[in-house]
Length: 144
Image (spheres, rainbow, N blue to C red):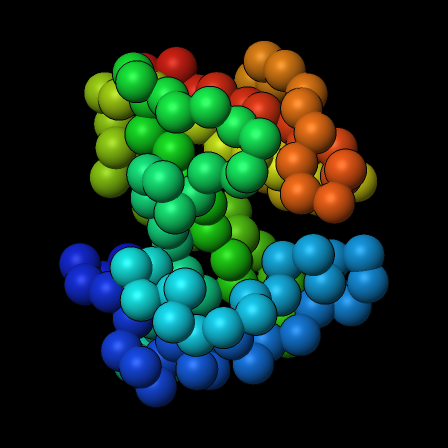
């Protein structure tokens, strides 16, 4: 797997916008491909399997700007979940930003993503209310 150093093409953004996760994970469905242009594609053997977003694009409304950490978010194609790719992707992200603290916001119900982040060294630092009154967990991975 590889994170490409470019934004999604219009075709890739349209593909990601078409991904549909089962409830309650449908919270992560993208509504428009235009909001995905700054996401970085994740490919495996030339095939789009996920994305990584950074900075303001990874922030959840209700979360304040992190001045000392890189905000990071990621997603995998729905048919590829629970196959170990999330662990591989998280390792790639943490290696890419080694030496910098990372911050992620995960929906409170999403225990599998919280466990994934914790296995990569993230720790829960606070809970906050995001869009539609949903509860989120903010997690930080210290530099190192």
